[in-house]
Image (cartoon, rainbow, N blue to C red; front, side, top):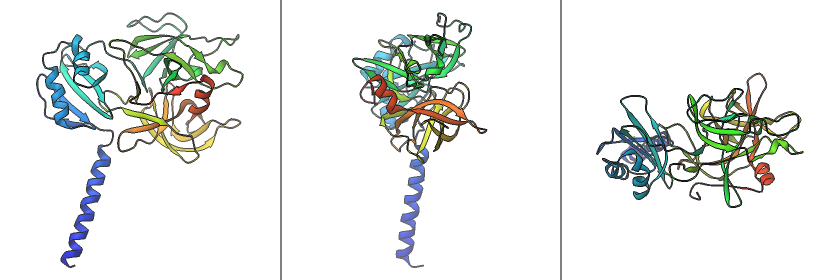
Length: 330
């Protein structure tokens, strides 16, 4: 083998290694050297210098002022959660298509809001934050952020709320869940498309707003993984590779659209789903930049292998006269 050929082969091998490394890092945090009072600093889609600058800016900042400090640094806080050990908490923030995770000592600020893929509690009775869920309540998953006129709402599955014999919504009250109790009370179901003559398994919930209550067009993947950024929608084409996130099955359950549910136009997939996943976001396979496109709302399971079927997003938006909110618009 001559020298020129060896050089070409080495270059090709290097490119393959680099490509594989980049692919492996999609949707994962990079660990950075900690600074200030941070216990660790992770970043995705930005540099460690960017992340350490934020961690430095947070040094000594009390939990109540963390949201304002992040906004001043150019980052949008999404949520904070206690780690469960060493009296520390994790805080997640985004900037454009970048996200960071910083662990700090102390008790977490009250910072949380609507994201697709979060756990929801639906109940007929009044929901009290931090208290046990009312009797007869059910647990589902949140889907995409939408805009209805000048207001915003969040999607989930219509059957999570249920209908009475008079076709009124049975479990009208809803809250984000902070296991094991309900957390942020969202309020009553605003629209339930199961009540329509042409039934669609989708409903609209109010989303939080104001200080400490962000609503973001992202798919939550747990605190320790960066979120996916929702950028537009896609049609549920046969053979298309899609993923979904559910409170029971977890994030990024992926497969392909292979058939329709008998007697309906509901697309069904090769993905397995379980109880509690209902209402979860169905989205395209993530791109290298961490973006996904919204495809539908998890509806039911079908057959021996519990194949996940879903309600396509487009007819839901048409029925609501609504538009999808994409990252960067909120």
